[in-house]
Length: 282
Image 1 (spheres, rainbow, N blue to C red):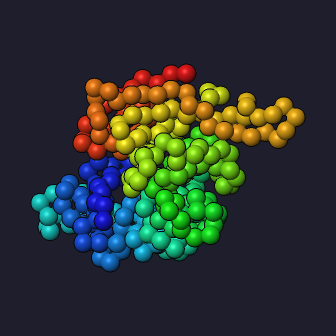
Image 2 (spheres, one colour):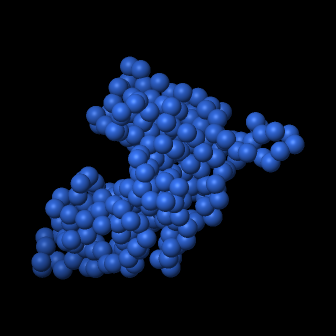
C-alpha cells in the first residue's frame, strides 16, 4: 500500500499520514494526535484547509472534517490547538480500489479514480454521486483501464483522467471533450503507466488551455486541445495537440511523478527525490 504525507493549505505544522498498517493519522509538529484504524487509505487530497478526501483499498471515498480543539497546557508543554478528523460522508460506487483523488472547493467537486476503470465525480458539499467517467467502457475492468491520475482545472472546471490506455478531458458535467490514445507510446509488455503525473496550467487570461503530462522516462509534454482539425462541413471534433516537449536530459532519468504550475513556472518532482523547474510560455 502506498504511503503518503499531506499538509492542509496554510498549515505546514499539521499533516495527515496514511499507508502504514492501513491507518490514517493526524500529526501536529510531528507528533501523532489521532489514529483512525481500519480505513485502508491509499490516497488523499485537501479541498480546503478543513476538508479532507481519502480513497481506500475497499473502494470507498471518505470525506472528513478537520477541526481543532484547545490543547490543555497542563497536559503538554506547549499551547495551541490539537487537530482531529471526523468522518462526514462515506461515498460508495467504485467496484475496485481507489488509487487517486483530487478535490476542488471552487467547483465543489471531488474526483476519484479506481482500479475498476472508472473516475467518479462527487458533490463535495452534499456527499453525493454525480457522474462516472469510464476508461473501461462501462462494462467492468479491462486490461490497463485503471484510472491512476486525476486533475481538476480550478479556472474552468475541466477534469483530466488518465489510465495506461487513455488520457481523457471532460467538462465539469462529465461531457467528453478530447481523448488522447496512449497505447502507441506505451512499451509493449510494460506494466507501469507511461504517464506518471498530470497537471493543468491555469491561466484565465489565456485562450490556450494547457495540460502537462509527466512520463516514466522523466520527460514532460505540454498539450492543448482544439477543433481546428475538424471537417468544415462536419461536427466539431476536439483533439489533443502537443505544444512542446520538455526533455529531462541531464536533469533526471527517473519518472516525473509530480507536476505543479506556479505562474509561468512548472515544477517537476521525480521518483528519485529531485526537483527541477521549467519556464513555460505560449
